[in-house]
Length: 185
Image (tube, rainbow, N blue to C red; front, side):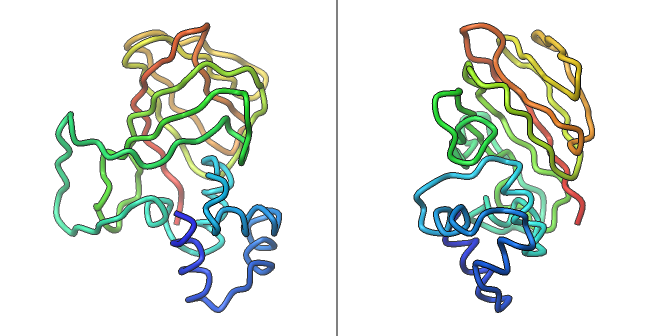
C-alpha cells in the first residue's frame, strides 16, 4: 500500500509535504506509510486517497477488472490489518480487512469482511462518506457521535462517516462484520 501511495503521489508531482498538507496528515506519517513502517487506519487512508484524487480501493487493490467480480467464500483476499482507528495505534485491538471486490475498477463502494477484535481505546474517527455494517458473528459496539449502539448477529447500521465514530467488538470476543464503505469521488 505504501508503494502505491508513493507512486500516485510522485505521478502527480507532489512532495510528501504537499500530500501532508492536502490530506491533513503529518509528513512523518506519510513517510512511514510509504516506507511500509506503519499501516494506516481507514480514516487517514481515506483522507490520503481523496488528496491524491483516487478512490480508496486504488490504494488497497492489486488487480484491476472491468466486468463483475465474483469472490468465493474462501477467496476473500486479506487487504490490510489495521490497529485501532488511529494510524499506527497500539494496544487497542485490530481490524482485519478482507476485500470482497479487489480488482473491480471504477467502483464507488468498497465491500469488506472485517474481523473486529476487542479494543481498549475509545478514540473516534471521522472521514467523508457513508458506511453500512452488518454483524455476521459476535457483537459490536458502535460509538456514533454521543451515542453508542450495541449490535448482535443480523443487526446492521448505516451512517454518515463524517460524524465521529468507532467500531469495536463488544466484550472480550471478536466479531465478524460485512462492511460497505462509500467515499465520494
